[in-house]
Image (cartoon, rainbow, N blue to C red; front, side, top):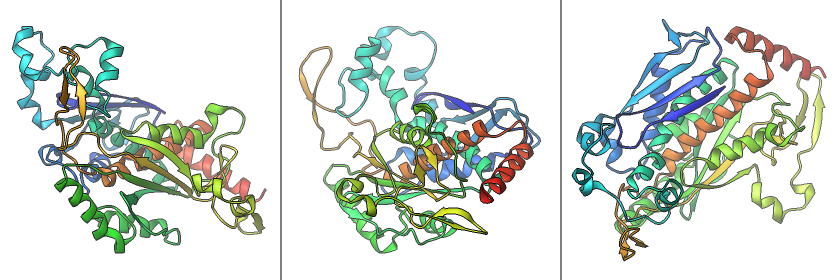
Amino acid sequence: MRYLTAGESHGKQVSTIIEGVPAKMELVKDDINHSLLRRQGGYGRGRRMKIEKDLVEITSGVRHGYTLGSPISLVITNDDFKHWVDVMGEDPIDEDANIRRKITKPRPGHADLNGALKYDHRDMRNVLERSSARETTARVAAGAVAKKILNELGIKVIGYVKRIYQVEAEDHHHLSVEEKIERSNQSPVRTLDSSKEQEMMDAIDQAKRDGDSIGGIAEVHVEGVPAGLGSHVHYDRKLDSRIAGSVVSINAFKGVEFGVGFDAAKRRGSDVHDEIVHHQDQGFYRTSNRLGGFEGGMTTGMPIIVKGVMKPIPTLYKPLNSVDIDTKEPFQASIERSDSCAVPAASVVMEHVVAWEVANALLEQFTSDTIDQLKSEVKRYRERIQSF
């Protein structure tokens, strides 16, 4: 599969075109809208989430509730565009008419200045509108389609919050994936550790009172993936590498780890690697999952456990210093959005980009013109490796 996204933060719409989805798979708007609404939730979000109610329109590739095998186009309209027509419309205007919304003051931590330098924009609105996290709406839509494919194969994915600022949730790897889904969806901060919810919310509230922002760590759990997905033979076929790149591509994410991750640097090998055993009914499996479901760029059959660290949002009510690109005078950065913490919502985005990479790897490895072909191929492969 592959997909492209288009759209600006205050533009008419954000769009996704997906190619490669198997034919004859059930797909309706609610499959995608559920994910979009989850992305908009979470404690610490700003006013923008109350303005936009993201709902998808499927404009091609689906007929009477089933995929056709042709490209699927998804459109999410920006209801607030009516207030931005003069600023973000596509028709030519008198340059002086738009001077009030022209942005020449780059915000530290954003793409503003780098994008202006690269594309020679004297108005940095041309950069910030596209570099906005609003684009993740389109990626969640693509990921929702990927999750539908994974559900057909008995593979489940859930994202949740492991840490907000200095408040870290206890590990809950003993929980089933169904229990993790339920706890995450019930928690206002999407954590599995209910004993830490209030501390996390208090930290978010304090940051908001201080005119500041805080980040954290999101974790994604994928269960039911067969061993051998991905490949060791070349760098761009290693599935953990592709997942890592996809996670870091999410706005504000700065690092990724699998299983014990960076803690492996503090441990001995005997406390890092997962021992292999064999059972007649189960085939080969690991007695632990410290490597997060990967060895040699391929899945081991254990759950994929991947964490991503999100930096604090750089737009602050306690603004940082910068320099105007026109006057070269120093100033204090302006405010474009006001989330004090977006980690709960970001865990939903991370869940969907990981789901995309796993589903894509499956479609690369198995015949998938139709969903029944894919299910049959995966079933046959599971049986083969179980009796290996």
